[in-house]
Amino acid sequence: MTATIRPGLDSDEASYIRLIGDAWSEFPNCILDVDGEVPELRALGTYFARTGGAVWVAEEAGRVVGMVATRPLGSDRAWEICKMYVEKAQRGTGLAHTLLGGAEAHAMRAGAERLVLWTDTRFDAAHRFYEKLGFVRAGSIRILDDISKSLEFRYAKPVVGVVVEALDAAAAASAERRLAAILVACVDAGASVSYLPPLAVETARTFWRRVSGDVAMGNRLLLVAWVDGRMAGTVQIDLATPGNQRHRAELGKLLVHPDFRRAGTGRALMQRAEQAARGMGRTLLTLDTRAGDDGEALYRSLGWQEGGRIPGYATDSKGALHDTLFFYKPL
Image 1 (tube, rainbow, N blue to C red):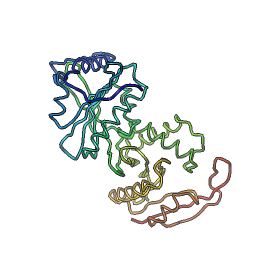
Image 2 (image 1 turned 45 degrees about the horizontal axis):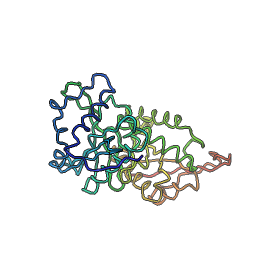
Image 3 (image 1 turned 180 degrees about the horizontal axis):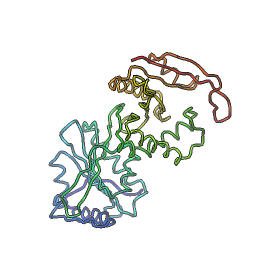
Image 4 (image 1 turned 135 degrees about the horizontal axis):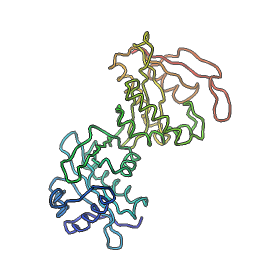
């Protein structure tokens, strides 16, 4: 990427209109009506300055090739990312990542604790981009009364500190790519979570699709942790226990990306899982882990009690047998 990022000006009006118009023209019945629906494009710098936000453009050889803006929403310390567009020839160069990263950093310096954005349901490539960066679907689809008959997905993510949240089925499905990357990285690092390295990305994604289905059916609770805006880990609560064990739930697939180990992420996930299980009326939790793994020390430090050991229960990538420990914790 050789483009230069600078503040967007009112005088960039023609560039804003061209960028957005070109992007929308890639989709059927997606029409840019500037004066009827987005007149702010005529003076976008002033528009965002008035709302306490800012707009930037990426310029290369005197031509504006990308743009992004952000503004405070006035509630829950949330900021919106908006007007995110990059010329087709610049996609895949890292420019979009640079623009979005700059907007996120600006919002966080201004006190944002959560970022949200809206994106047309037709913009599949944009969805993949945002999901890769830790955004997940949040809330209902927005219906716009515009000439294009637009429907928009809402995406969001927390951006400050370690935050653990439960995902509904739509959010779980949108997190599939990032969760698959976390699972692959953990397996490659030696985690004992049913898979052996090298784990194919598509195999990992298939696993998370099944999880999303369980979440949709109400059989599973999926918790995800973000660390300063990056999706860093996850744990699940299996609620589909037999009829005579409705007081119990099983924790599984505690995964923390290797880049976020030793930062309290796993502990935060476990504590939030226990809180969530208690809130759903579960009074006993169980789990299993490979003996000697990092997880064993974590569980013991959180008050989990060892209930038994099975020697040679699972193998590692070299074929060596390892014991598995079973833990329980009354709530």
